[in-house]
Length: 369
Image 1: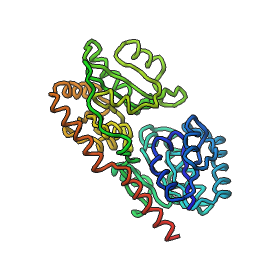
Image 2: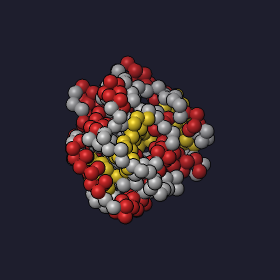
Image 3: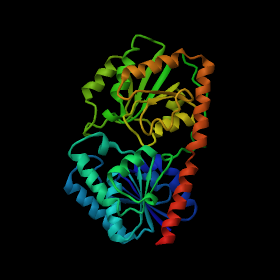
Image 4: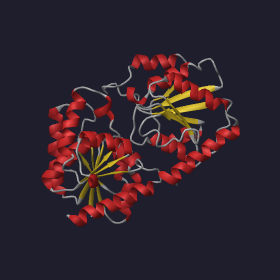
């Protein structure tokens, strides 16, 4: 079987689809990755698959560039004739579905979060919604990462009930992300891993951190890519202000996320909405308590009071209060939250659950073709 993975970056494939790719390779399937070239391209090629450069502007709405991507994707599907295509991220989902319709290639889309389409009103969201309505009628199956997203999306885009289902995110490789002991620091380290954009709640994280700027026993670290070209990026001057204020340590990028998690006491994500946030899964798998906003996607990974705490979205004071609550806990109470985090991902978010769902869905689609 020939399987094409379609995404907006090789980074996405390397970080989120590794287990699924290796699953297919281990069965002797031929795997193609259709994504723009980036610093992770060679890493995925080293897995033993075929990469085809398909330039795609990840954000924005440039019809000329997007039409070029559509033509490229169409030519690759016609030439390579994959048995099935698996797509990820908004544009890849839309254009792969459209191309699949005209090349008779079944496409399984993964909606990892509704993002701009529902969070930001305006031209981009309107265009994306219209394209979704056209494209997803042709998709063989659509995976959502939580029930809220599935219900909200289907209220706008009418799809057959058997055309949709819910996955526990991209899953987590429990053999790679193992529990680690809590750090023996003389402070409590709160870690947020995220792109530096508004909808991830970085402003709320920074404002909450500012409440503790004079308390040496509490530290806050933000790790993630700053993208000034993103339409919803935080301004560089604002980021610099947080750093110069001394209440946020900023790390632009790291390939050592497991080390950063192991050196932290709590993982924080004040996002406005998610699919199933990978950073929370990684933190939980390594036995870390979680603080996150009470919104779709985030609350799937946190049971309030069991493995962490939920706070009100877009409310830095609510986050501050939950930070204070965590700081008031005894070491035994913190350890219990940590243990429960690992239990939760073992029960609900094991990567093998995702792999089995893809196997069943692919088999059903190909057998009915």
